[in-house]
Length: 163
Image (cartoon, rainbow, N blue to C red; front, side, top):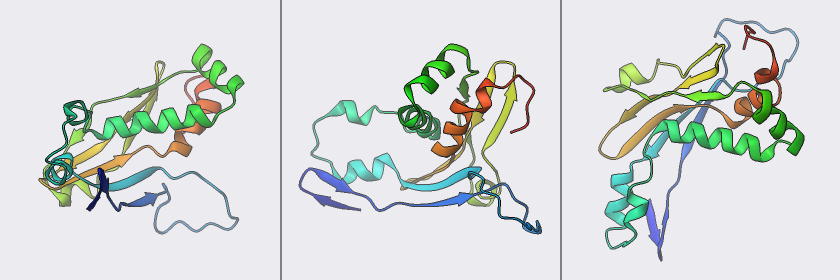
């Protein structure tokens, strides 16, 4: 992390997971969107240490949750969908329901815990696994592509339907 003028430059890395089992043998290549994105983010507190002179207190009150990143995935999916798809989803599709993050205290618990997604008659529930340390914020989040699949296809199917 570095400071360039009024900007904080943060390098980030993500690990993308699909839902396949390690021993799964696939004969024909089948494209499938990732099940989750595993993120290690610089904590807001660490960024504010670099920006200690920044006067905009509104920025400090922005959400510091994995749930907010899941909401961003839906926003991106809607922005990249056609106008007709957005209207159809908003009119008759079952929504994505963002649950509060499931906070874990240690990496050995966070690492094997997957992003939770389940359907019911109300829509698709998404619950992130989060771990917050002094300098980092770890999240398992909904990939924007998976959100786009929900908006354009899966939300319009009758419940129950397999993900």
